[in-house]
Image (cartoon, rainbow, N blue to C red; front, side, top):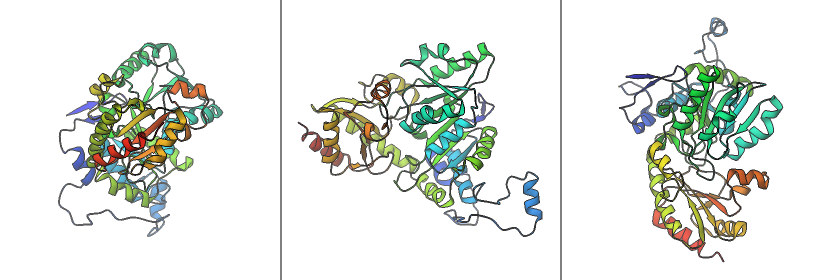
Length: 410
C-alpha cells in the first residue's frame, strides 16, 4: 500500500521488515553468492574497456562509474541502505553533516529567496544562516517561540523553504511537526506557491522519529552522530524523493562535499547496530535524567521523556522514543558547568554526540560558540548548561559518575 507524498514521493507503509532488519540487510534479502560485507572500492577513478563507455556516460547513462567524486559503488551501497533505513525514496551521502545541510538548502533556495526557520538550531546551521547565506542574497526569517501562531505572519511569497529542527540542539525543545506542516500547506494554497519543508532529524534519528510519515519533504542528518555511533567517522546524509536527490547530487559534484568510500564502508558497518545502540541510549538517557532531576545542584533537566519537559505531550505524540540526549543546567553558571565536566571519570569531555561512549560538552564553548548574549538568549542557551550525549555504558556506572561530579560543585 502506498501513500502519495507532498512532493510526489510515494511512501510505502512499512509493516515489514523492521528497521533493524533493513539496516542490517539492506535490499539483499534473498540467497545469492557474494561477500557478506560489502567491499571497499578505494579508488578515485574507474578504468574503461574502451571509449564507448565514457561516451554512454556523456549521453546520460548515470549508472556508469567514472569518478568517485561523482559516484562510487561503496558509497552507493551505503546510500541505498540509509534510504531503506530512513524510509526515503533515495539518500545522498556527504563528508559531514554541514555538507549535507548546506547542499540540501542550496538545492532549494536561490538569490532573492527566503527561508523561514524555527529559532533554536544547531550552532553550525545557525552560523551558516547568519554568516554565509546573506552573501548569496538569501534571507532567513525566524519564528518566535511558538511558531504555530506566527507562521502566517512570517511566510511571504518569497519563502521557498521552512526549516525545522526537533528536538533542538542543545535545549531539546520539541517542535510540533504536524502543526507546522498543516499551516505550511494552508499557506501554500493561499499564496499559490510551493514551499519545501526540511527537518534536521539528528537528535531523534529514525529510531525515535519518522518525519516522512508526518509529511516532511526532506530530512537531513549528521551521520557522524547516531548513524555512525562510534566517534570514528564524519558524514552527513540527505533523504528525500529521487527527483530532489538528483538535484542534490548534481550540486554536490561542484560544492565538493562528496563522501569517500572508506567512510561509507565504516558507516555501513555501523548501521548494522544502529537500532540496538539507540534503544539502549534511550533507556540510559531516561534513567540518567530521572536521577539528575533529583540532585540539588541541578537547577533544570531538559529531556523530552520527563513529564517536567514543557513539550512532553507533543514529544509523546510524534516520537516513538525520547532519544539519548539530556541537557542540564547546573548551579554556579559557567564555573559550575566547567567543574562538572572536569570532574567526570566515565563520561568523556568531547564535542560530539550519538556515540557508544557518553560525551559531555558546554554549549557556549562548543555548538553555540561565537554567539552574542542576545543570540544565546533567543536560543535558550545559558552558561551553566551541560549537554550530555548518553552512551551505552552500564547505567549504574553513569549515574554514580554524574552524582559524584555534581557533589563537588559548591
